[in-house]
Length: 164
Length: 164
DNA sequence: ATTGAAAGGCTTCTTAC
DNA sequence: GTAAGAAGCCTTTCAAT
Image (tube, rainbow over all chains, first blue to last red; front, side, top):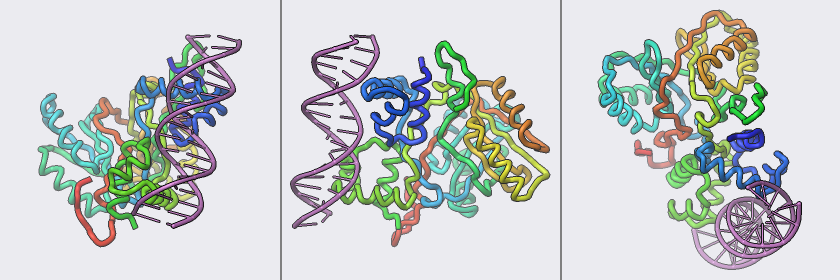
């Protein structure tokens, strides 16, 4: 389904989506048209979900990242659906997972400072009933990338445990 | 520095960077050239860091996300620099923070399955000396966006605590 | 079927006002 | 900020493989 050439195309595009198709083709050893068709196909199939601009967190004044671990007594699907809807409303919540183990949910939240976090937190718990919450703050962002590893992609025929 | 029009431009671009400049201008009430100049400036200033393609995690076979909490006895800058370099080598690590509180570092890692996680984990600890590690797995990704909240941007003059 | 070259149409970018 | 033009890229067509 995805072959080695597709993988190289994806690698280029998730690094920089402004590279012209002709240039991508040149790099992967394809001329413009077939390269363009491959990209089109990858978009149709949903392998490429979207093309976006990545903003600088500092510049938009969200310098603090917080991780919120939530434990709840509620475990039914209805409650989760409502919970998920409430959370999705908050643009500060950039990630939201249902977890295995002790913690039920994990949120990643970005805000300007601790004070803003506190305000956010109050708005959050006013909207939803949560038993147990604990927050940890990130002091320094050492790595944060939208690039997924491509070395696990199942390419037909060859299964190379290759590098990126 | 960033005004309300810039903010709307950023909002559009971090949602979909394929929208033509003329169309963005139309939406924010600007003609093409000034809108184009604003985008250019936002890129120069580093507010817009990059333009990328967002891939579907399933399609590239990284269905499992794991959060690794690391506690170490080492706390000097040299050790961290080396640690950071080692971690950055792993494409599976998509996020990496130095934390406040009990946990020293938090990693987000994406892999195909638990088995692959185990293999990754072994490679990780073989490369670096870590005292205490604990891993939790995400069962379900409810939200995961590259879009930062824009309601905290300090726009000149008006300080509206507005919605996105 | 798949490829690559070439042509049309749209976007980006530049310049002049 | 507007308008218009130049350059470049995307997208389609078509002939050739």
